[in-house]
Length: 113
Image (cartoon, rainbow, N blue to C red; front, side, top):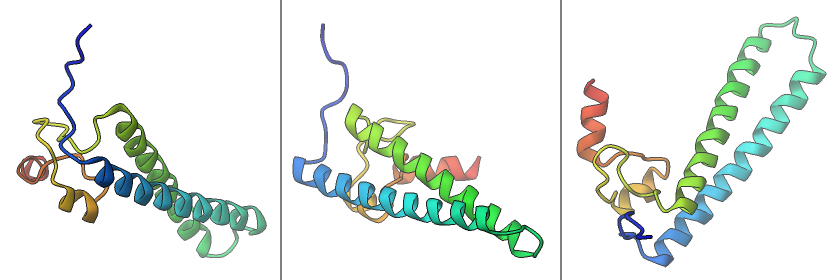
């Protein structure tokens, strides 16, 4: 059976650097989420910070999910490819925005829609 996935456009060193960055961010967000959950369990929910706490927990949970999906794409070989046109996303863009799923041109189209 032939593998029809495009060849990686990123070097092994680049992929490892991105993997380490994603894993570090995931660990940081998981710690943040655990801290927020502990704070929620300790709190009474009576003050105005309860709503802020829920918003922060939701954002942290979403970030954990996005980082997990990015690491899964990295393992599957789909990371670093545009989700729309499948062009390679430059390493420089991924270094700045490791969760980028679109090349710059497709990102502009996606935002305009």
